[in-house]
Length: 103
Image (tube, rainbow, N blue to C red; front, top):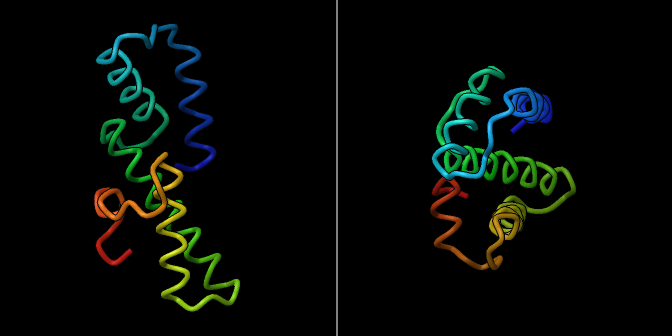
């Protein structure tokens, strides 16, 4: 998620005054905020997946630009993306769930 989209969502949620305590209420408030900020709503899990894929792509590009072989950059980026989700770096099941198969 881009910094500008995140800021727009935060601003919208601050204006809405809706409580985010109830799970369904949170999901709907999040969806409305994303759409109001010009984003595409795919549910909070879809946004988590999108954010993880964007993070992976950025880390991979940094690894390659830093002189790592593509395979090493891919493995490191995958491990860092899975760890960012709060899982162990070696959880291939989480990598398969959140990242493209080639990751």
